[in-house]
Image (tube, rainbow, N blue to C red):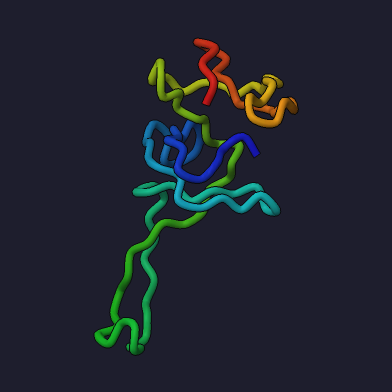
Length: 107
């Protein structure tokens, strides 16, 4: 998947279009991501030891990963993600690194 945990992502399609936040969780098997503060839903919960009061809880719901673009840390623009194979200094083996298609910065 092109989005990883702790990336900053921008929603480019759907009801939450234009909102951005930190990626909290990635589900690669279903192609969905949870972004902080995006796609908030309300759930009615019973009292439990973890939540003794119960009531209505607001939390983030997953959205489709195809509706999300990674925000480049250098140029601060939402951009497509490419891959470049770079030799690792310690082992000498080549690693795939993600690069910004706008500015070419590796992240």
